[in-house]
Length: 466
Image (cartoon, rainbow, N blue to C red; front, side, top):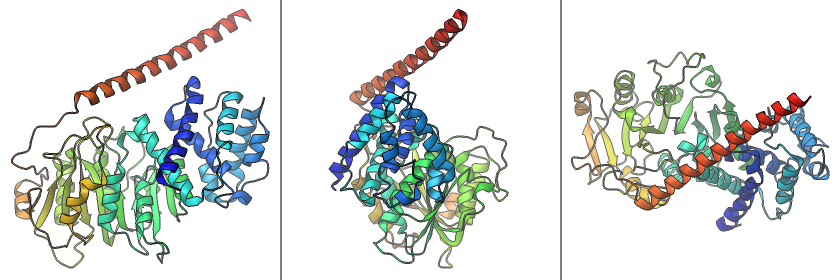
């Protein structure tokens, strides 16, 4: 099935979300619901029909249409999350909550899914359709977990440079919907043996569910934990030979759970905490590519100490300064740090390479998105060695800075070219588009609040009449 057909089918499925708009259902919640329904509809296609108890299958749900369908569906979900023998299926349906409020809406969405001809879709094409839905959720919702959705061209470039191989342990400690892990899986030749082990951690329950479904549809073996990688939740994971990650941005909200004891420098900055976790979780020969915001390059205190360790102990060899606007949250400026657990050849580097893909580049926006070709020059400059030991040549965008100079900067890694231009701004058309989106979201929020207030008023009136 072609990419166009997959996108068309994803569009049809996404369009069913509009059925639920009157119930105030947001995109992300709809996608979690769609995960349940697509799994049940295609259980036969992916070979798990026999793992689903009789009475909890798609045909049973279709037969229950009409009054009482929603109640039947809720009981189905609970049973699937508790009674199924397969642990992965059980995890996908664990602690289920349905966004449906009316029998009619559930019946309409089920009918819409049932009307699609699924017979020509194997497990691989279902996985691609699901990925298209995940990306659509990130680009259209532009909120919540989609706020920092890692652009696919960036994910693919990082994977190509890190060259995942047979028998590796590949980890993403902030797995999201599994994009890095799946891209690594795709990069390997079919039938690669021994198969890599894929592992990760995801803290948000609905996103964790989406990640499990995504990996399941791609036939990937691994372990994704529901929890916080910065706590003891991650202790059962194996040391990783490759980490690919885009950890959450921002500061911790002050949760009561204790951080892992092996994080040297206490900090509320999530990215600095994740960097510490990643270097601790790597095997002795491990390598990593990690997306971080600009402040990680220059923040004092714990930031300086973490950078010092990366430079002096953990073989930081390349910093990629990314273009502006590639993330959906306004104003987020990012970089990729490439480093190894330790010098892989017994050699100690005396310089760090900096590639500037921001200066002189247009500001990417929703109308002008990042493409695969935007990384061609950087990939050529980086070279073929995933540990960063290829012969390199300086150029207009690619410079090396000696470690002595980095030490003289107190480990400030915010290296900018002398002609660094002012920040580019979106064009007028894009600003208008953003304003329209903001007004639409505000209007939707007001409508939902009005509906809630109205429902309270109706309840109070009914109580008064009793």
